[in-house]
Length: 211
Image 1: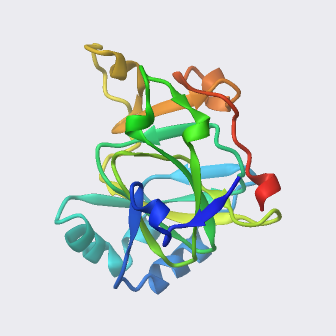
Image 2: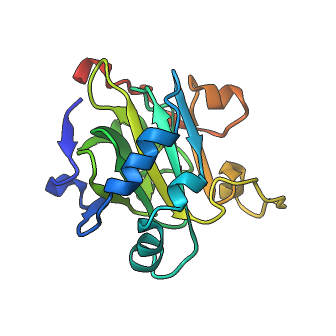
């Protein structure tokens, strides 16, 4: 699988790199206060990250004053497994280089996405990568075969919290998996076995051989 850079023109439909932010303190906190799971782990809101000076700047500049949360997604991963979207932008900032597997929401056909539509993009450590609301994404991947990832995840406050109790009014409601999180799983993904909506068809992409 070809792996592009988030600075390449091919990334433009999916997101962009935000310039001007000093991420050193935030990444130091990520390095020193968060674990590195064998698989992949995620925490949506972490005080050691939110108490850094950049929190207010990201909230007011990047999100225009919307309440935000800063968490982490760390570990080891080379597989697609699922794709998700939110109703808003997500920011990703890596302690190390990392790779995003993404697709576009408008590539969905009747609630299903062919994984041949998925593209891979490498982000450099420290880059503030904006992933648009219309971009399907999920767990980051490590950028080398024997590598690892530690990635800051910035989202509006409450995202990925408990799923609201709803009465379904349309087909999209079946894909709601948590607060502000719509999930599409591949049939071979652990999330599918846990009851997630199966909406990815084709190969469950593994980029290990491309690293």
